[in-house]
Every structure is written in C-alpha cells, then in structure tokens.
Length: 74
Image 1 (spheres, rainbow, N blue to C red):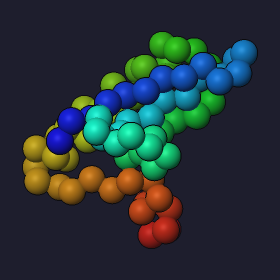
Image 2: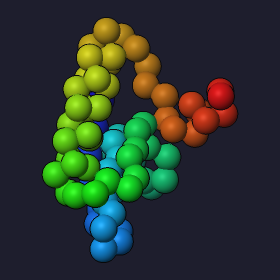
Image 3: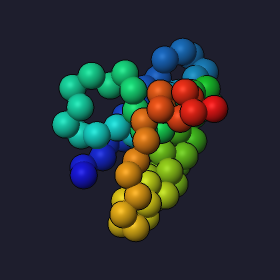
C-alpha cells in the first residue's frame, strides 16, 4: 500500500493535512486528517507522526480504516 500526505493552507491561519492511498483519485475519505493546524510545520509534523503509526499497523498486518468507517463505528 502506498500512502500519501497532503497539506493544504485553507485559511490565513489554518493548515489541513490528511493521509490517503496514493492511488485514490477522490481525496474525500482519507485514513487520517488534522484540520486547524496553526502552521505548515505543525501540519507536516502531525502527518509524519501519524504516517509512522499507520506504517507500523500495515507492517503488523492490520487493515487500515478510512475516517468514514471510524466515524460510523463511534
């Protein structure tokens, strides 16, 4: 599985980051996201930390869940 990180500056003081499948052409349901980051560095740092967690989960044989699946389980 190839994952990608996307970081977007969406307001003057806010950054968004998400992690999705690199082959997913519709980035509407990522595996993880963080909104409201105060800087690009914060968004990238959070995404990199989460990417390491997801990498370990995949290496252990865990199937990743998308955000929508986690929200419906709650």
